[in-house]
Length: 250
Image (cartoon, rainbow, N blue to C red; front, side):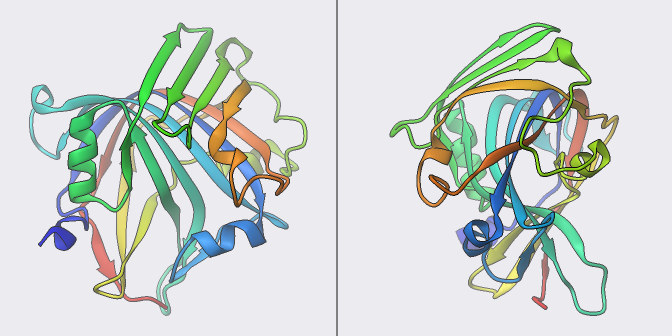
């Protein structure tokens, strides 16, 4: 019964008050073993991409319920850019989620009840204003600690030094979030596909100073030549997800 519930069984809606996404270029050979059955890396030249999404979320609730029943929380999510190739159908671009951290115990319980997104509890501090955003995340075993400062006044900022992207348009195609999220259902042997619906999506490139990112200091990312590829900021975005659907693998 629990296994069936984790297929994202109902639509959800929320409001993204602020979202900062850091996307890292990672060699294909490092990311490929992490995506699981049925998916391919969404790559650019010789690199795949791991995104760290930092989101201040308001009023998360089953779709159709009033906002006062929603939950407010902070989320950090680690996702790989992937493609789901479906024979005879359109290939879907989306994200494979590796782990999720939140500052609310209730979101850990509910998130792990209704999804495969691997929610964990973390301590989170967010400060800033219209010109600066600082986020500190502390995890119990320091496995996904993060400290980043974003210069919002720099918008639009140039791409970071060392990025593999040749143009800003190329970087925007990996700004996230993508239209779909994928998770493999081991019992059904099928892919759970969740479609996101967003409004007023205008990601703006920003300059960031990533002071701590312990997730990248561990295997398989340590000594793999991981580098920051882009950083984008959005605010005040209504967002929704459709119920998950099961699809056959290619």
